[in-house]
Figure (cartoon, helix red, strand yellow):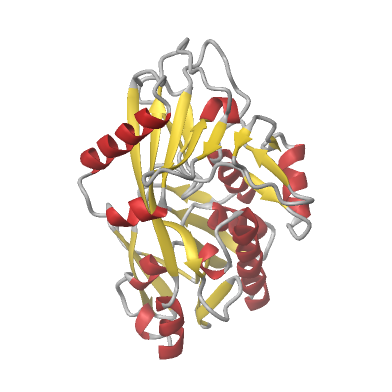
Length: 337
């Protein structure tokens, strides 16, 4: 039975692992460098109160006529998703589309798929290199000894694939390397503001797109957006910066960046109370601006043993794009068996 490693516990990696359940495989392992599941669909907790959470990455899902409908239906029937009903100012509504939120936090979508997969999931496992050893892939990590796998599926952002050490990248041809190098991403910061229970945030909207500020692009009263307002749980606010601000301050001191964002936020929402705690998140690879060309959903880097990569870098940065890639990856693995 083939031993499989999925690198990355974001949406593509989790959905791919779930789609592989029941295939003629041995154990499937998922490794992620973070402390929890989600990738760019992560939900952060207040340092003071674990019940107070904020979605620092993806905010909601948009389902259109061309979306993979069965995936939405499954998440709705299991209570993972529910319709976005709270008012979002400046939201561009496409005809025939519907928006959904995850009341338990956006990372609950990824956790749902990881649970469905039955895979062995390990966090704080940063993959540093992949090398060919005796017909298997030897995967090195930041901590712990290397391990061997028959099949490796990489779902991390494309620039991070190109940073991996080992001889795996030397085995791929020059045109593939050029295709991977041509992928590009936007960068931005997100701020999570966490409040004590009972704090009132007096604004008429649940979220708002900002069009006239050089720093702030989006603000969400996150618990209000997710329909989970409760006197027992403190509210939370999420701020996303503009892409221009993100790229200009990509390597700035995080404390200075946080202060800059807060000063802009104060001008936009002067009535906002002082938070109990704050988390500043840098998304170096926020959204794909140019996908890997001519590789819809995946790229096979090596056939025997199988080394394959995918993710939104091979489609586009939304739920549908990640699911398309996961389906493409799972299909390729199954046909390889």
